[in-house]
Amino acid sequence: MTKKAFRPDVDAPEYKGAYVPYDIIKEGAIAVLVVFILTAALALVFSSPDEKAITIKTWSNADAVDFAQTAGDELAGTSAVAGYGAPYNSNGTSQHWGFLSPEKWVGVHIPINTSQDFVIDPLSAQPAQPALTAALNQWKSASSTVQTAWADAFNKAEPNLTFVNNRVIIPTKAAGPIPVLLNYETQMARSGALDQALVTQNGFYTTNYTKPLLFLSDGTYFAGLANKQHLLGSQWGMMNETGQYPGQAWLWLYTFWYQVKPWSTSASGDFLVWGTMMILTALMVLVPFIPGLRSIPRKIKIYRIIWREHYTQ
Image 1 (cartoon, one colour):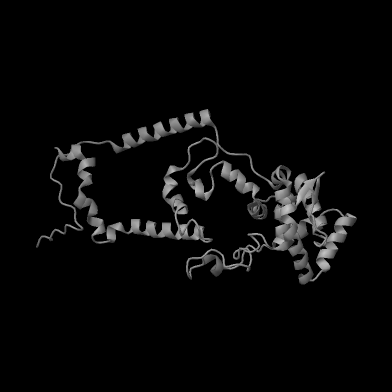
Image 2: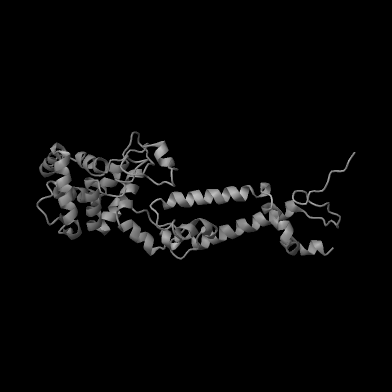
């Protein structure tokens, strides 16, 4: 039988050195036990770094002006979520990378109409109140042109919006029923009723917090909290933890891309980072099949330094 030719780029040379007994089961069991003891001890000492959940009630009581401004943007359809695109609506291009846009391909499967879902529907479900009912009827019966005119007037006055004596003050008379709607919306939020209204679904239990989370994301309050905790993308936030706790250092490569252009400045930054990591992951998985690249460890011989005791025998 002809002996197969040795291929240095693929085959490993036959080992002719000495052998040393090694109990991998024993070593593994000891390692697992040590890690378990350390984990339990550190958990008892430091507890959990989890912060108390931020709700719309929390937000509206801490910064009523920011909440009212955001609610007005949701009603006017000028918020980030309102113009995002799939999977929430058809008003934007969604995140994409050239012609690649998985969100757009899948389409709108979590339909969100910010005006209806975040403002009109929750207010319509409230007990009948003359002023609120009149404002809702005025908004619903108006044409889209008139609603747009009211929204434009609100947008111009929005920077000067104030909250005085538990009331939202909008310095304009051209915004139609918007001031009344925002006053009731803010009162509803500060009482906690809006949180419940946005998660109400069929069935007694619910874990779908999509709407309140999207609402929160459109304001500046939530982002401000993230900034204080160094959790923003520009602060390597993905690998940070709240408070003074150490974060997930192994995520450095993923969050690194958020610090450099074009990833850091693109509106599709999340998708660009994801695509980049998928390419890098594929390259790593395919290293054993790429000629030349797979031979680098054998050629630079770092393994001889790592296993130097073995190679001295």
